[in-house]
Image 1 (tube, rainbow, N blue to C red):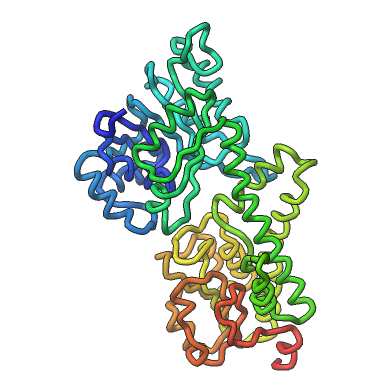
Image 2 (image 1 turned 90 degrees about the horizontal axis):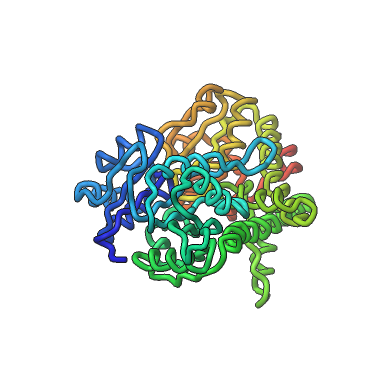
Length: 431
């Protein structure tokens, strides 16, 4: 398989699909990028991007103008089909794979003997097999893994290969990180590994599709559980009147202790979502994973209640929330606990709520509906109001004690540790 000879169809041009499509195109392959949103297709076809990611804009412009990346509304024939669409949760915390199945439907008419189908979307264990069953039903003229009918090899190879990248470093980590390549058969895994080795420098390790699906979920459940320990510790320290940041800093001096930093919750489409996939698959066994999710979700409730106390204690002061994205220095609002907290505050307090968010041009509609307004950091600092640090953007980190201008500070990220935290007792005294 040579780069310049293959056509790759990537279905889903979001935070993973677009960088992956652009990267593969930059290696010489012709890539058909598919998205159901016409505005996304039009934006990319014009050489622009609809998401914020380091160095992605220049790369997309280059591969679009060289006609290596072609934006389309529907799939086209290709040698390799990659599915990178969302897998959200339902209201009762169950995984929804409708988008994955719809993507499989869309590529089915274009499949031909010798094609490779790869699922990259984070998915419940067994989803890759479901795709295989669906495609076998839709295309009875082709053979699929498990449906060989005596053939040595099926016509279509199918594999699961999850991403493991950090927003802000996606293009770097798509190349450098090791990849877990799970095939429905060993031959499928080998086909997928050969493909990824065209653009991945990290090691591509073959395994089964089910194992690869579980690996992805495990990685994020592990991180969620560790964050839950830090968040629970912060609640305990607040309850007994101790600085959680100092406790963590000193505890981490132990050679075998590495406690993570607490925050207002956990966000993003991976860590805040994937553990529920495991809980759904084994509800009686996944007790620790469930409790960790509940702790992290509950931290947002706790932060909301603490800010409401400050608002009631200082009714004359403006309230500015610093950050609504799910993590620092990105524009991604998916599953953001900061956004959830600010939405609830705006619903209760309306125009008293101001937001500083340097990575978002306009506030989400729900915030605007409730009367919250977006202001610049300098304006917020001039007001001597209440400053609620929800995201540790670099711009916020650089604000010194003097520039905070006597504001009441509630810092959920620990970036302004030299400002004494406001306890319930001190708030009552100041009032």
